[in-house]
Length: 404
Image (cartoon, rainbow, N blue to C red):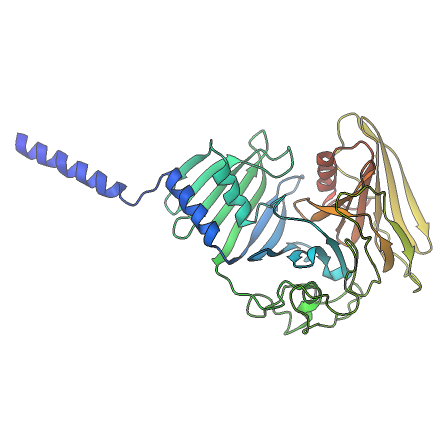
């Protein structure tokens, strides 16, 4: 009897050892992740991002492409309004494209090296490997890391990252605030290492016009980026199959550090990033401006403590409809809203800032302006004393707000 008990104990010990074989601890997984990133040539991922920053969660379709050494393409599509904005990096710089408005802004920037996004694989792995206090869990099909968030905003504190055990592809990311409330949630539907892209997949002109070809065909097989099929007037946009990555494209390409292109006769201002400059100036083109539709007055649901709305004005001049809101108190700032027409614009040198639902542009030095577009409306927050993180919170609170 005593011998049987001893043999049973040995069997249990061996079973436990065998069960433990193949399991990895946090250090082993981190080592593997460094190797994956070091050997990675390209990837393509797609999923759904949910922002819990307002009363109602907002969902966005996310598609991200990356190819070494520094080509990136991110498409953010408002799931409800079916409006797409594209952030693109190629040899010419970093672009923010809004194909439905036929507009493109260009930057000279090291993005995303200086500011990653929650849906970029390198950013996630950098968060894991750089946090020595990381927490680790081994689930059935996933390795789960709980690490500090590093997204250039004080509102995001922690994040949980689920990685597929088989290939370390991302499955889900949850980013939380200081109260452990999930603010951003990304669920990947697909993620593929070693994706192959067409030669013009990261070309600016190609991304602006690609959706009109092959029945709005998108993806790596087409070698193009998805964009809007028609312009604001409903007319189809011509394709540019001759463009190649890093090329200047055809007539209408952006010229300058930041600017707007593709049929809008817009050009940015030359200069180095971070140069001191005020707001851009706008002048109407020769074409007669069309009557702009009224969108009401869109107010943010968030204001910094000690700040209140002073007044708002509706400006209707030369067929343009725009709104100016002025806030005063702890910080003083203005919010300008307009539905832009085709016009010549001179913009100060800018840098990219992540708003979650879209990309914004910060320009100026002593007087800073945050500019972004959403649902055909251009917004500008301008202030001499409002911190950048507060600008971002205000902008985020205006998303999905309707005019009153």
